[in-house]
Amino acid sequence: MGLINTTQQAYYSGNDFGSYQFVSLEDIINNFIVAYVGEGKIINKVRRSDIQFHSRRALQELSFDVFKSTKSQEIELSASCTMVLPQDYVNYVKLMWTDSNGIERILYPTSKTSNPFAIDQSTTGFSDNDSGYNLDPNTGYTDLLEQEQSDAWTKYKASGDLTGDITNASSDDQDSDLYDYNKGQRYGIDPQFAQVNGSFYIDELKGKIHFSSNVSGKTVILKYISDSLGTDAEMQVHKFAEEAMYKYIAHAILSTKINIPEYLVARFKKERFAEVRKAKLRLSNIKLEEITQILRGKFKQIK
Image (tube, rainbow, N blue to C red):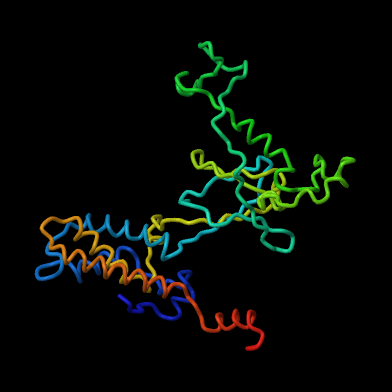
């Protein structure tokens, strides 16, 4: 624990750079057993499987608010204007596309449309009921057959007006005789429709992101939050938050055991809160020079 057991040559010739700042989840569990579990210690007896469960839960919860386990993924958007959500996706942070200069152009979610379950009503499908709804042969004709995309989203994707794209050839703002008369009518428009970067809709049930047609062919970047429960290499804890993990696990175990004095549970709840707060401050990585730079931009007299 905390000992450098590799030589400088082995470190720089390998590919495990920067790993010293992290502690593996397995080490967290082992260290917790040594420090907290045993005769005459806070927790007299507990199964290792219980510690593993609570350590994973602690890692999940701290990943959302303390660790900020943000990942990113970049793809070139195809003509279908869809992107599959990453395997370890929990929630998105930001979606953008990059222009020829590498500048990130922010995409905003749309709230005016969606991609609902579209029932296939084509005449080529199999239907044995009066509704005209086609049934899925892959399920033995017991479930409804779904279209690939709903009409609502297909129509939205084909329209450039809804993203404020006045360069679209179908837009009345530009190509019609009413263009000059429309000047000034964008006053008070909803900001999500007053930008030309494009928009998106996340279909979480199907695990896909749908984009407006003006994003097709562009390089799209997704920044998202994960819960850190992936491979062994991903299940790591920053050393700034190591103590917060111990307090979180201890409180979780004590609060679920019987015949534990309430004052002891309350004590570790308070200590957990304090350590989580301390970890947040440490991981915020605020530097005096950066604060000074911001202040210099706000107050001209201290430049």
